[in-house]
Structure formats: structure tokens, C-alpha cells
Image (cartoon, rainbow, N blue to C red; front, side):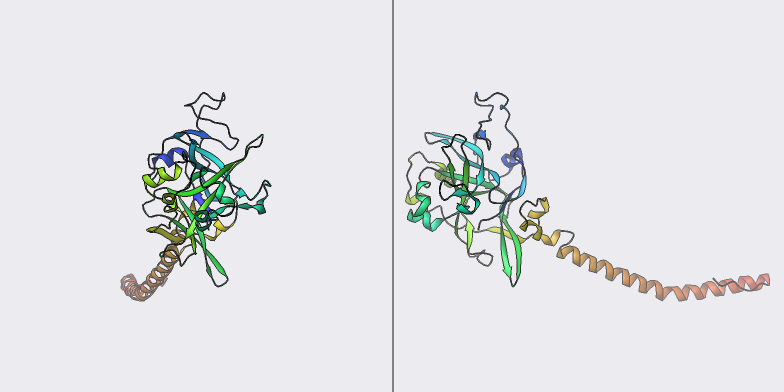
Length: 302
């Protein structure tokens, strides 16, 4: 964890949701590292903030938005599109990158994360994340989100290379799973829920790591989790149904029970008709007989 998450919203929808916590993003930087904010005198024809491509199945190596400080000396924030996965070295190979950073290693200042924890902190914007529960040979995907539907803001690190064409990448920080989610997986992302914690995490002005920052790397409780369609397991597959409970889909449990109820009601209806039909036929036959006798004709049986 975390190996897949969702953000099926446009920029305006993100800002309208609770949980955006008054993060006034001053500018947008696209995946080509062009500043495209109308608030700044920047490249011509880049004066309109672009829309985010809604994604319900964001996988490693995908481009996705993160929020970070514009620079260390300014409290202004920017939302920037980055690729998910920080290389272990200078080689940008898929099998030589980290998509997650373990909180334990960050606290110890061990390994590659020591260079990022002081000044390269960011927030990864999402609606929630996916995790797979193993049941025998089967793996059942589940989606975890805030119960009130607010944005899930995950703590992360980012890196911008010093190449001629800079490459911007990010990783999501994980910690031990909460008691309420340990049945699903032993890890979960670090989720920042208060404005104070978010401000503290994004404040990189001191270029230093502190014990106070370490306290933020805790597991979150009070999250909603439910099973979702297996189709989300295929990288590149996209559907709004991926974030919906499988029980409410047409191929879900609720629909299955509804079908069973309909079949049962149809069977009962057929039985009632069969039990009533002979009586009606007898009454109709007698009425037809009397009518035909008065006319001197044999009754016609249909």
C-alpha cells in the first residue's frame, strides 16, 4: 500500500468539496513544468488554468496532481502535475523507483528519504485509495475514503530533476494500518485531516525535519471501506463505478437479491393465476351453457 487511488474530479469540483481546507493554490504547473496560472505573467497562451483529467484508477507512472509550496521562502502553494514514482537513482526505470515511502524509514532518516524529508514535502490529492483483500486464491479490491466524502489528502514527497527538461515525480508516505483497517492490509497512507497539520507538513521554510513533523505520520481512524469491482485491478481501466460499492452495482449483491425477490414474486403470481383460472373457467362454462340452452345451441368451450 498504497498502489492505486482515485481522483475522478475536475479542478472546480475539487475546490468545492469539503476538506480542501482553504488551500489557496496560487498557480498550476503542468506535466511539462510550464506555469499556467493567469495570476502570473507567464508563457503566452498558458493563461487559463487547465482541467484535471478525472481518473478513477490512478496507478504508478501515471500523471496526477500534488500540492506543494511554490518555493521555500513563500507560503504560497501550487498544484502541480507529477508522475507517481521516485527513482532510486538517476535512472528513471519503472523497476527502479519507489511509489511509497515507509514512515519508519523517514523517522530514522534512513536511505533515500533523508534527502526529501526536510524540504520536499507535498500533499497527494485523492478521493480515496484501493487495497486488495486476499481470500484464498481470490483478491477482492476495496476502496477506502472519508465517510463524509471530503477529499483525502495524503502526505507525500516530491522530486524535481535538474535536467534540461525537468521531470517531476512523487511518492506517497505509508504507515501501519489502523485497528479498524488491519484486516484489509498492514499498511495505509498517512492522511492529513486538519488545516493545522496540513500547514505544518507543507511548511518547508526551515529545511529541517522535526519531532513535530514525525507526529503527523500516524494512521487515520474513522474511514469508510467497502468492496468494489474487480475490474479496477486492470491498469488503464477507467470507470466511475470503480469507487462505488459492488453491492449497489447491477452485478452486485443487492441487485442479486432484488432479482431473487422478483423471481419469487413472479412464481407466486403464476400460482395464484393457476389456482383462480379453473374457478373462472367453470363459472364461464355454466354461464355459457345457460345462455346456449335458451337459444337451443350447444355451448362453445374455448
